[in-house]
Image (cartoon, rainbow, N blue to C red):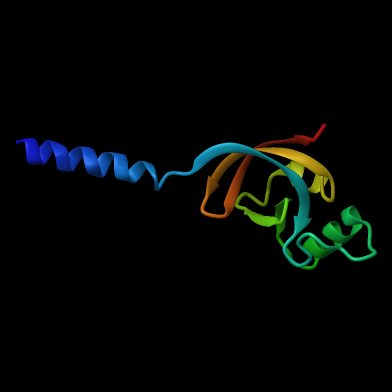
Length: 104
């Protein structure tokens, strides 16, 4: 009986790691083609243009680029190229955005 309970507890707690981690990240909304660097093109114009050509929105936090799972979030287009605070859930390297606001 103890073995069964121990095994059940191990499995239950082990699956917690598979779930996404809630958090918030402050960074810049960019696109998957350019990442952190837009060259001499203004970030908003570059991000918007690249997304129209098929790139996906990403958020650049420091030197890391995270993909955004829910590309249909209206805040992504609104804040393209801007420094933002994103609240949501991370699963691997993809963030599902729950809330997005201009960073202070």
